[in-house]
Length: 563
Image (tube, rainbow, N blue to C red; front, side):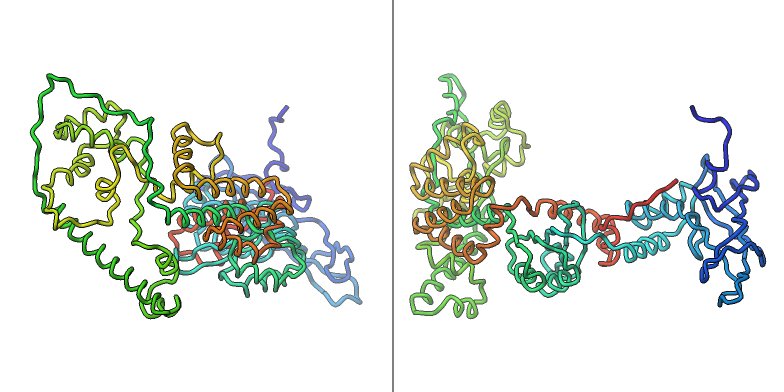
């Protein structure tokens, strides 16, 4: 049962060094007066002294009570040391557990400032502290936060995860180090380089395991800074690398990614008595200009494609072509393996968009129903969630007068080229969507996705081979063995699929870390979570925080007791 009498233990900070003398209430708040201990120990000779030299008052801010300010006035004694052999003649005993040297608030009030500053930052912390009747400026909050982070270093980690984070997106990067055992940030480095990581590892020799992504600079930094540590490749990045390799390979087989699903419902037949809608042919300057721009862009891209093939046929190396044309060699590597210029990738239509009703709208258009509002009412009954303007923009190319045969241009736009080459009811699957379906097991697929996968397996033999290998690779990483991994690499190499061969060579270059990914339980998942937290902190401070403040807010605070 709670006592009804307010005692000194409930008003003063937890310390045997203070004795409450009086409590006064005024309009400005509460005033507590207390005195220090009646004896003190000399800091030099450790002899207890009862000889008081003088007294002085310290005025401190304390935690608020009942919404009012609390001021603590402490009478502190100066003491004489009576030990004649001691070099110290006068001293002041510290008020341990109550207040630090030169501080103007109690320790528990200072801990509250740290907690609020760590949670919300400077200006929000200043407003919150003012609301709590502990007025503190934002500069003071941030200064205290930086100071305590520099003094109290985190415990020495044994298992770390490293990854890069962006100072400015796509321009400059830093490195975050996470203690995977404790699931908290160990340090924040301003650079993303092998040298900075190696220097950090040399300063922390207790690290035994390093989990990292596929970046080579972190592998190099780990070997230089902690040569005895075990490096673990992140499983998520390995799976993503394989998926990207599969996507690049499927991009070469675009013609085999055109399917016709039997489950697509055909539009209802037009009743005999339905009124025939007259075709509407309106020439649109907007569509014409858009088509002209796309034709020019396609022609420029086609000329570049043909020029690269001519330069390659003349015996030039990829690096020479890249320097001469100022094009990244990744695009050149992709184009020299293709016989014709690839189509532009298009985003897969989501459920409820106008693109998902293309087959239905095409058949209704061919039946003569070309009134936009009537088509809008029909597809809304089938789940369309968009507006009329999106539908009108989609139907606009169909309303244009057809060009003369000699003026027909094979556009790079997938929509119009699909209409000219794909039979009715067929659909072009993008390489990205096909790669996503390829890596999913049968229970993870919907009925429509399973039908798509079966069609692609029949049309594209390489799709079936890569699907089996992708699912096998995911199984090995989750519950496989090192010997199974090596058998998988041999099997993937024997398929003679170009992109898979490149993936196998990349894995072989980092085989020790990949083997550790199969054997060890550590991954970079907690690191990605801490990076998301760091991004939120950066946005909260409008991107103006330096590495010192970011480090202070992302590192954990020491254990604080606000009592």
